Length: 239
Image (cartoon, rainbow, N blue to C red; front, side, top):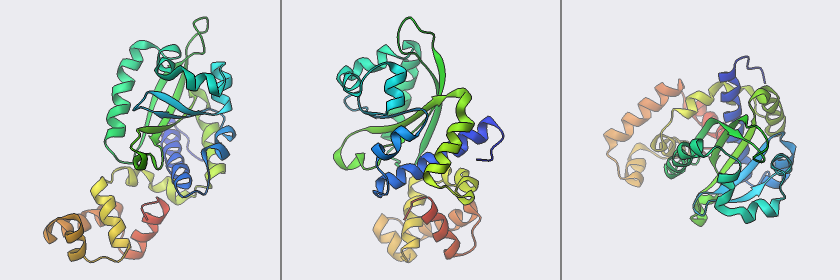
């Protein structure tokens, strides 16, 4: 990772978490394969039932809990380890984020965490995305990677090693982040060789709307050919 500012570190972590999630979705990796490799808390939480469904060993050690005890806590998990005033803000933000239904979107925020009442809170930087496949079982699962704020550069290098993210992904992540759900749908259909007429029929849009989307997508991404668009779509898991 070559980023030199905190914002760049955050953007690179977001890009790498996106690709990591895509690899899990494609069964290239599993959460169990990678969770204990990452030097930070790796969690899967189901916001529908407000319960942890996975925690890596780092998270268990930091919180001084076993995986089984964390699972058994249910909604109490959010009250025990986080400042209640911050959770009043973070919980609705997370629900809004996941209810958008955009499985490719990545969200980052800072939060304070402590293992018990006798310990001072520490600042963590958390990067989150919807857990791959959760939409299929009607759950509201979200995948978090939380690292101490002063370790962003280190976690970036570890994620980079893990998912083998090339410079193309990190360079173009911010362009990807600007795409709407509809634009990603149209990119996928273009990459599959569909005509504007077929795309309009499949998405119940007018030809004029589809053509405007195509023009805006090419302009937004700065691509001039279908082959360049396919490369972009492949790199970010759109196809």
